[in-house]
Image (cartoon, rainbow, N blue to C red; front, side, top):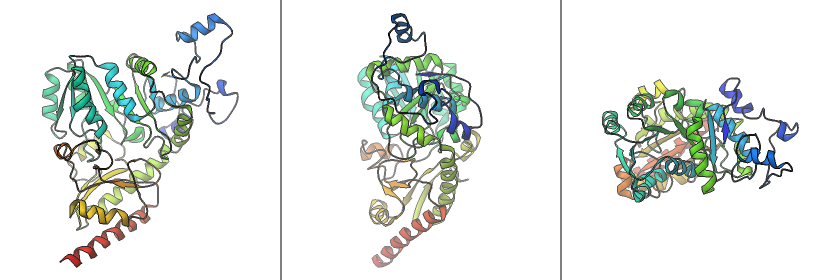
Length: 405
């Protein structure tokens, strides 16, 4: 677990330098080494005890803390303007660990219906087993969300923009409602990244990332991270150190290396995604486009208020549903057909095999996810190449439609 130190420079500069000022442990290396050691030895018993109790800087055992992992935590902490941060082996470990660390039997959670499929399963299937009540509200309905919060809850969980339909919730408005009843506000900021959105400055208490996605950006390392106040992070950290979902030092190194280009990648992805969303919006074979950067998006005004960029993920539905998707996806040259997002390469796939594969078709329908939806995570390729690729794939569908007439 890392605690607040002074951050310097703009967010792009912090992406490169943040957390890496702590060079004493690494003996003048300009790049953060991977420290694979499981344990750290001490000859002085008093010093060992002080480090073990957190009274002195240092490391005892890598399930608890590790030098490479600590630098990763510090970099994300700085980007999110948080007091403290702690990491996990995966994004879902960060989400589940946070919830189980902070909730007790008899507690109540208010959240939205449009959370990531794994998160949704925790709310629907796991928390109720521990006698924790969960109420999932229509994401569009801020008034009902406020009314449910007012009834009393211990935790408000938000995800914005949502996966995969890119709905946006008003963090400031709902955080104010939560504060009135003493609820903790947790926000999944994976889609937005710290480059585009800062939930803590909008009233959230904790912000979560699946670091596997945009933070790492290269689809080669799993990880999760939680940032927030020192007191809350200590609770989450203690749960993680005992339950053992520890971030591996090699994964931390890969995530750190990826984060050095985070601001550049997100800048390109923001630009390409908006251009592509506008192109798809005009295409006759595209039924709907979900992207908060479009001016006719239901939550565009909220997105403008709380985001500095609209992100690198969009989704769109094709006329012809799942049959059209089966024809369309194999025609894309510049897209992995895989269950991931936020990488340097474009990735495309339907929620039924990616974000919400754990959910039934009925559950997806309740969340407003059409079976014919494609989630399209824009990479850092040249925008024109991606536009041409999409255009060619859509033309294949046009030819097929003409033959069927």
